[in-house]
Length: 256
Image (cartoon, rainbow, N blue to C red; front, side, top):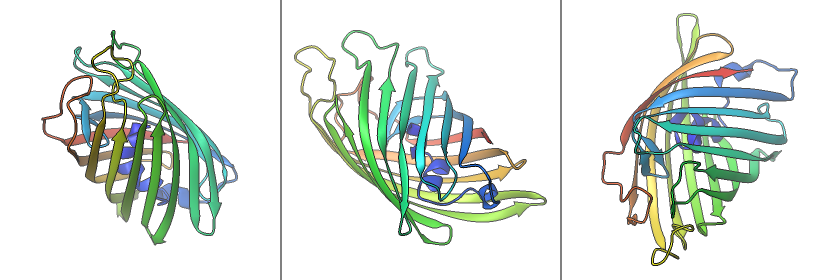
């Protein structure tokens, strides 16, 4: 589910409907799929890997509808020193009085983890989002990771500027997010003396991108995101994050 910290999906997550979704649909469900290149893989302000290819597939209710959603996400780093990750997530969305509420669970899996490294974890999440003005929305989310004993709160806001390139619908998307995490066991599978490592930190990020709908169901996006943390511990699989957290991405997506 880490794609949701990138610009295009943050903007969608705060309740701003994709341009092509303005047309009426007779279906109660829709599917989306994305493949993207990223120069950095950043999660909650922290660099996880360098250059990577990512993929995401999701099935969810159409805009404004209640119902269950499920999805999967994967990250394959270019560097052999960094390891493959995939996530599975699902939950339920409910609309009430102009708000959209969501709740569910995400599983994080690291099949190439070695001895002492975290090979899996899972967290529950609850969120509330609302469109404040046309094309501008806000979202608040709480997460709790059961294995890392990590309680995280995050707020996000996004604004979409529609435009056209000749016959193609397009948008410029701007967003920002900030959060705080309190971790009581950063490395749950690590042997002593690396057990019960605590890590309290804040994080934030800014994003900007543009998306062009090549057809009613196919879109292309490019964007930039900056993410960083304050007071982040070095207790992470690849050491502390001292690199540049400004990164770019390019993606192609499909909706059906």
